[in-house]
Length: 145
Image (tube, rainbow, N blue to C red; front, top):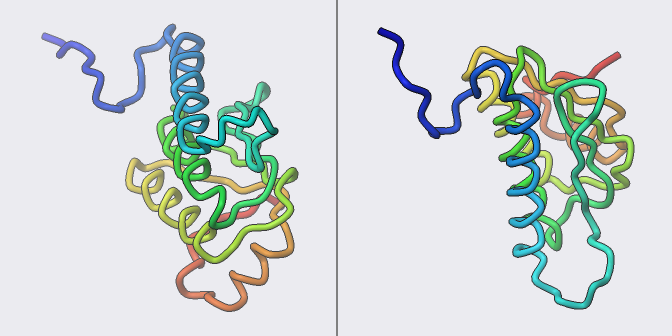
């Protein structure tokens, strides 16, 4: 007898992908709005959007102390995206501080612990500099060629 699917963060059953994407990203948008909490209506300094051509996300903005809650929420969603490879496009990211890189390392460890890969695309210069400073800690990060 097949066990029933539980809402424990596991991969959704086949055929539920679009519903899963919509619900997860809506949840992330709500958490990002709550985390920013400015109430000014100003654009967020960091945004995350789902990739349409492959499983993953596109980040846009800066990843620093001010945007740490948004990055955390976005990476939580990214680690729950099903598939053997999850893509994180950083082409819209101007800056990542050391704590943001540590968050990427942790997200990578989470995905790797599930037997999957987190593949980073278009890393900004700041990510490469942090990797140079902390090569052992960042060794597991995988960047697309």
